[in-house]
Length: 327
Ligand code: UDP
Image (tube, rainbow, N blue to C red; front, side, top):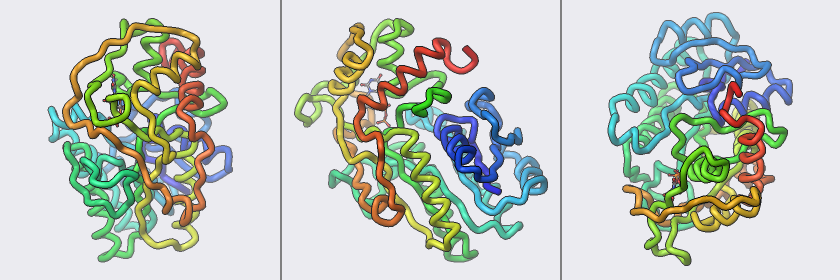
């Protein structure tokens, strides 16, 4: 039985759907603070908070867990700068609770959601996994801290882990059942779509003077359904006895903010107000993954590597759920 922590959130719910499709036994553990009950689907559900060790013990008591997946983190960079304490508590202390419970009960396999933010400002693009780790914000710090915690637990206690470093997760499941519903929404694609749908007055481009061909930031947009596939491969890799490892997950293609705006115009057939503002603090000009290792070791091959497909799937879900989950 797999424990899917944060399985009611954006990426975790897509993972749980994939596990349902594959007939893999699992239970979602989520406090529903930022997750959505409507995203749980037909999975078993245990409501609890990883910050509460009793909740963690209770889910292990009730289910025969052999592998843990962790998606249950706070993710907003700006919030992490303003309120680092919350991030260290939820993204690190809570994971310590989880790992300690694993250690007590002999659970030795963990798949962890990490991030490109562990690298900070890149010195090489595309970014390989052995690039120096210099996070530029507390969000990245907390993810790197857990990677290091996992590494120490591996050396000392035999825990095996796979850390998956996502670049820009986007899109929604191709069947249109699940979507992205962050509140507040800070990510580029859903924010543009909200402007296209008339649910936001405009979209502001954060900076047009970057050292890139069109002056806007370039990012590597990776489809959430491809992320779920990579996680499933990581599960199978660990279950087959694979050693601890870290993998970048990106499509390998970089798209500028202006290119994403164009993709939204062409997918939706709509135009919308765009304003051009200052740079957002801490945004590197170019973040593109070198995902060679995930491809060669996990056999991962992203199916949706065009940002227009990500936009199409995200738009379809937004049109079908005009108020997000629950509508
Ligand atoms: N961005 C933007 N306007 C927005 C939100 C984001 O111009 O309203 C830019 C942001 O500066 C970055 C890119 O879009 O260059 C992707 O940002 P997002 O927050 O989606 O992901 P991040 O790269 O920060 O993980």
